[in-house]
Image 1 (cartoon, chains in turn purple, green):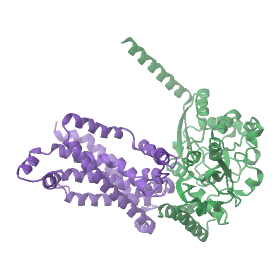
Image 2 (cartoon, rainbow over the protein chains, first blue to last red):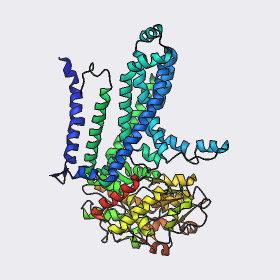
Image 3 (spheres, chains in turn purple, red):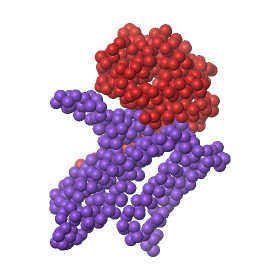
Length: 271
Length: 347
């Protein structure tokens, strides 16, 4: 039995649940009532739809940036622990992920609302209520909170595998801690950063539900728009066109990201 | 070891029991609104008939319509509102009900027997009816609320919950501007769009939501919100500071019916389910759980004076008179949705 035949079940899975659906999306996107047309894409050029897309991209960008700013030091910290304690920390990071993200978001709602725990505490210490929920920042916070682990773990796993002797060698040759990080650790960890960024940015652009819950339905993102087309309007054609645009954007950003990945050639470049 | 064997045996027996019950009565696929039935009534139905209920929920009429259109045979009983029943009938998506299987329909109030959305009474049995109005917190407003205009009053900045439902929110705004809720002219709709965007940009709207509003109002999260009357009655039961008003400009009165989609797989069970829901004691169970107006004369006869005098639950005639039913807007829903998206995406 050839090795490659082990992949057959996966191949069939891909065919039925990825390739065929993509063709169905393409079909719906380029037709309306059975006739081939570009109207669905023309409709997308209306200002409110472009506005929703730019808002989603902007929010996803901010989310990725914040995740990187918080996540990298975190991964560095985890990777520098000695083995036994590191496991404990890693587990602490993983535990919240065992719970469904929706439940976690609902939990945040009860914490952040005007009469919620945080505001009660603020009132109690005399600071007074702050408007925490139903704002753009609340949405951003929800995204960062949900996607942070997807930034930490790819970076952590690269850092943990990297050869410590290289850092020691740099130190022996007179580099200070800052220089070691900048010239050795950071470049070595780039593959982790690239996969972390893509694992945060992609789902962040397409999120829905989180913005609706924490933003109170006032901040529509691209994922919400696609959902609206399928569930409320029932316009599968426009919804498919939007999905296709989304996919194109994801491929483009993957392509751009890939250029930054020093490992690109070794793992059989797709691009 | 013995313990484990007996545990397995017990589980097997339970599963067999459940399976045989399912086999005996078959099943019925029910698609109803979120928070819109007494769980006890469902359990009682399963117990009495041996029919297994597969219960699914939706949040707005429009969401439900899209699902039913995609495959009507997935559902046996659905709970659309008046104007959606009109739509479903015009698209030939409903089965005619066999009233011989629904004898309890005789308890239905006369004025709901042949409603405008189903004039010959062929497709629907009314489940609940009610109004749309403002639920407000008397400790957070400066004067009694009696107009939709209060929801555009700058003093309530960041203190208003709007409804995340196209027809309701656009309808309410049309009313405030002096139009009919069923106005479809572009000029009126553009005015509505501007009003809603203005309301959002000035920061008056705290959130657009549907099922969450009642709990947030109980918690005192906002001064007022657009709600359905049953949600208002429910919330007022938990917070004495809350009051409900159907504004003077008028509002929407609605009826949610029980219907069977075309080609439903278990039509007989569906009719048994509808008949069960029309039984006075069951209608009463549902009424006491969700606090919408029951159209069931048998259930009303079981209520005390105080409940019947509650104007939130049973609106007096003059309130009903200034309200109107939604009419089906057919393909104009696309235009309505564009306005809605423009409002939702405005910043």
